[in-house]
Image 1 (cartoon, rainbow, N blue to C red):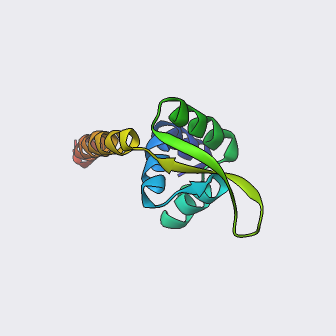
Image 2: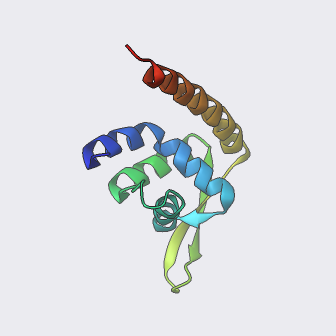
Image 3: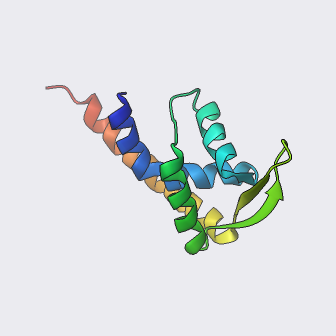
Length: 112
């Protein structure tokens, strides 16, 4: 996938990726982007310019919360964690994404 088309796809699924990542463990922003890249075997790269506005939006909507903490390298960082509302939203988003992916796959399988 070209970098441009990858960023277009990521833009539509960034909230889902962040919520899923935070459902595994609380972490700071840089850790979130690294975890997404690691889990996707390097296929998905989230740039900081997209991630931090998404984190702010998710926090404003009550889907995540944050607090200050110290990283493994002894630096101060804001740690994010998913809320109960965020877990419910994650379940709904996963269902919606799977339905979308199944529909897309059905179209791609057509011959003609």
